[in-house]
Image 1: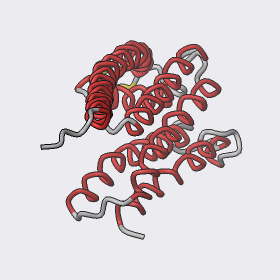
Image 2: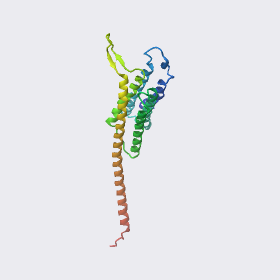
Image 3: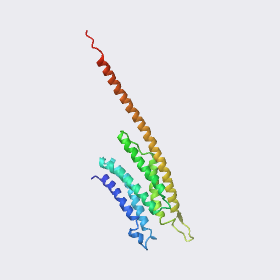
Image 4: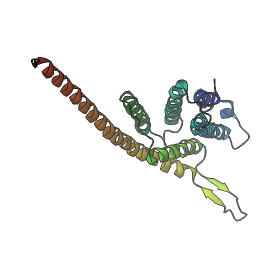
Length: 234
């Protein structure tokens, strides 16, 4: 197995790992010392960020090393969908005040819709390229998941505290709320963008198919007409 496929499989392996880390069975969940009891959230955030980095790394290495394989083409989108679906299902149970079920349904539904459109497009002989909206969705997705995990433990962080009680205040809970709702909006826009792009290409593909069929039928009719004409004897 080549390196890009190994990286993709490692991303799939992070799904059960992330579920375990955010479960009540995780050892740090019962800790009474350390990072204010936040080891569970910190570890889960790091795991998700690393898995998200591999999302672009495996494709980059496959193209650079010319190791694009059928297995990689199958596993890469599967790994992405598994990671996103698992993350938001976990967050519904882990931080329901930030990620209500209806938001998870929209975000996960978008993933299934795009997968379906890409499958149909592939069967019709064309592809749907990732748009800038889709790339923006990926960035907001990482921020939203990580912020929602951290907001389970903290409402805000104070960095570089001063003696007067000031410092750099990071509103973790507010960032999580904004990121989740922005993620929902961008997911809807991205789904519409993919659907419009798909419809335009499928319409052109259908038009080309009709043109080819008309051309074939015309040639067949011309051939039959030529066969029916009596041969001329000189």
